[in-house]
Length: 456
Image (cartoon, rainbow, N blue to C red; front, side, top):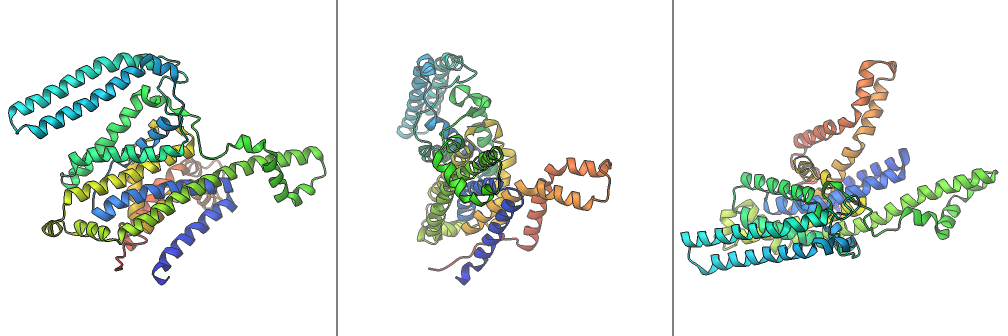
């Protein structure tokens, strides 16, 4: 228990801060922060597996997050029958054409010796495949996007329960990571970072501009979710009875029937929002706990010790007969798959898919800050970093506004400096996160909960 004293203390402080938000602002806001903290924790677990376990720099986190979000659309949305009839066959032919091109290229590379003729053959297959793909895809895309573009204009999905999309998100992200890893993992660390960032930009750009796939920047709204809807709860008598029972004393103090009914209605509305968020909290917390248990077991297993040995000294590990490239590929795929799960969780929580919100150049580094602040190589630290940074990211503006009002209370409302500071309060999140990171790097250079190697 003594080994986990710092962990318990740090998480207790974080829990107290979230509870304070509930008392000082609202429980709905507190639960919203908690849910996004849990989603951020899943992302940091994925990033920590890659960087903390194996020393791999992946700046393409937002690309895998976007793929996780795309999986929610492809799995849970009902198929658009008119769009499938208009151009679905074209897209299926294109899919199998891509598969055929990949198989032919692999066959040529595997069965023919390296020569200029093999290079010409591969080039001919790829270029010919692209031209044929374009001739088939363009008419299909135009037909699909012209089907009621204000509401649909895309193929839709499979119409399955949304929780299946979390698995699909992991498979999509892991599949892309496998392809990227096969190509880029042989690069030097700085080149790998640049390559993964550019690939993330390409993925996000494709999702934003290929409207037939998921409406692009038009967004997909009204997605399924694994929790009841607030309006259904507000019309459910059992839920209304529970709310009335909990607040019976306050309700009994109101004499006017009209005021009493209005008060009950408002209580039911507030309670329905909290209930739904609690449902999401339970689901997200379950995912975080499962991932934490699995990653902790892996960290202190022979495989985890092998990965840390490769991270600390690749040459020595290679001399011991370890396949560095194979192990790096495995850890790269696993970490990216977990990030894909987080992306699917985020879209499920929001209930909408907005490709324009994925900004690799901005939010990727926020995730990295979370890992660094929490403690690289420590799963508890990575999760804590997700909580701390996201809490600061959300609460920086209210905290800054409160401090501005306190320190400028003696100034009139018309004072230019006071008005400017109040107007700039939302931007204080960058200042607070930056100061927090500098303080951590100065006084806790290995993070709040640094890596601690335990021999078991």
